[in-house]
Image (cartoon, rainbow, N blue to C red; front, side):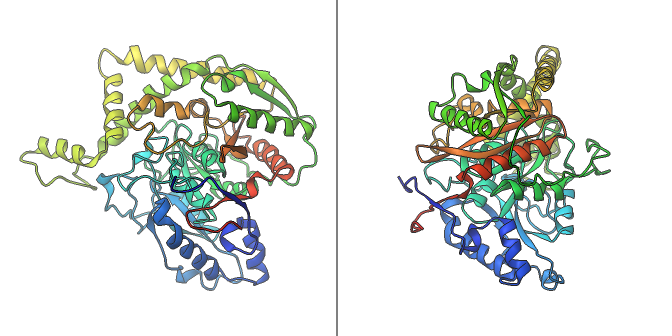
Length: 492
């Protein structure tokens, strides 16, 4: 093993171990300067990222325009490499965009900049967000900081690994079928997928437009709320952005969860879920009950069809969205073409990786004449049934609790030759995207020395309940305070 499965408690004397709200206190007291924080993270990246490969692009220089911000704290943020950043390379983990530099910022980035955040770097990811392990990147796989022989999850694996390893205080990811929550679970950090329409998708490179959402990856629940508050709001540049959104108030310190009703779907604890993962999640539900919540088993009967429906709907939308990468306007263009048709074919052949090609072909097939009704239309009907399962659940429960991932982080290379086994990694997160619901993953234990994630699923636009319950859990436990020991670090 290149790295033993080791952990240590947070070191309050180490800037890169602290949460953002802890850093804020130091900055407001004048004990450290924003440049000190920036340089600490750059040093940390230089120390460990050759082992992790969490970043594709690093921005080592502190922005000079933030030197004199009148005493207001400023913070770096790591950004998944499918979110547009003006003047900073945005590759989507693909050869086809390896040299693409956007001329504008995504709305999410503009909103963070308004609050004093700046881009520390762009994080590694499965190509065009298509993957569950961060092994599909054209820039090499990312490794899990808890065990360098294991995957960090995907597709936002670089963002989750960077936060877990202290290479960033927090990060942005995108979640199409679990791509924020699953890597957050496998790396032992907090990740939230907002309600569809809560966060603008303008400037997020599209994979599946009816499923994609930008979401935060953070050290703890409070930081998750802070980043959510900055990201949320209506955006006229995004036609799917929900109007009239109320700000999400802080979750506050919670002494009791009395009156909170929690459903535990039996379908999320069945075959395929590791015993140790199931035990950790049920123990976490027990903690919530000790805090006053009432939990009981429930059923979401159409869960078993979610994976099949997703792998028709998402590739169909990807087939349409990725048609723009043709070598004409931007991105890679082949040098071998002898005709226009050759140029299209060879550009895409050279630029896209195997998993992206697989999904484009699948999506094109299910949308083709004679197969649309048999596949795509039926998948959308299944999506409706899954939405109705959740709607019935909300008549009885305030939120649902389940594992985020059926397993802890699995070994690098274990599933790359078996796409179906890889797709199963998202079996517990995909239904949330199909229904457009908010969900949050937070660390709730360890199995074989690797983190286990508890997934909380909420009603549409009720992120506050998820944050409140998650905050209560973190006040009662200390799983979020553990840090991985990366490579040659000494246990602290």
